[in-house]
Image 1 (cartoon, rainbow, N blue to C red):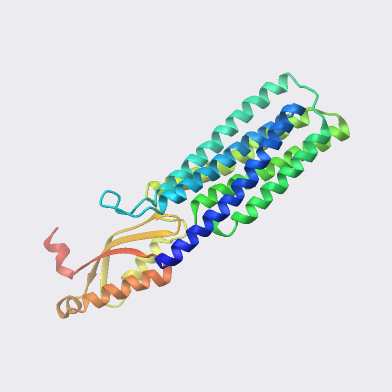
Image 2: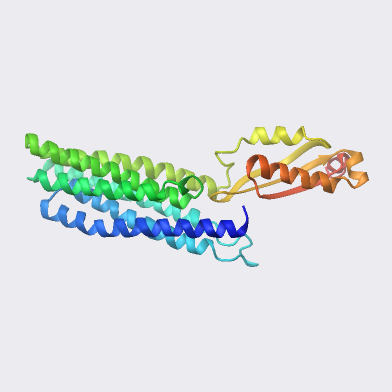
Length: 298
């Protein structure tokens, strides 16, 4: 991907995040007010989650801005990892809000209170529209940008939370059973915990420089070993710098003929192009070695 294309894509992602930020910030006020007026813990739980939505999107906007700063001699990869740190913080926020909801729900179980059904149903429905609208805007970039993936997961979890609030409102209207509100908040917490935990593990895996989930390490290793002029490969590492930015380093042993004739440079270029075309790995550091090199330095 060229730098111009990458910059244009990043700018588009930022515009999408601003739209989602505006929608959620506006509705946060409505849902929080509704929860306080009605006393609905399901609405307050969903509003609490929406606070993390707004915070997560704001964090994604900041991290995206920071990631576009140029590299320097101190940070040779630039600030690309800021995006991953943003996603990590977002996942922790999801888990913390889940714990808060569960504590509130269990306290409410012992002291139930009357909750009107209609406001809970209507506000939950409006929240669902806002969440689905935000998720719609975020859907395209989430596969290639972990920041957008974090915001998208927030939207989905919150959309399911809104559904829970709507169901609780409907049950209260039909049966008068106010504990449905508490039960809905527990289900919302479970959904939040699931999405937050997945995002946390993904962020940690990238920060620990694990092999990207979309990459088959053994397949690449075998493919490189079977290329013409390459006799062996060792010290192979594949990791993610930031979302959609993969890196690979390896030592490749080439045949004596390739090393002596000077063909090794063409072999190196061809291998780099092969990794770029087949797996989208742009950042490759390959050290070519003649067969005897490893034995001499053992």
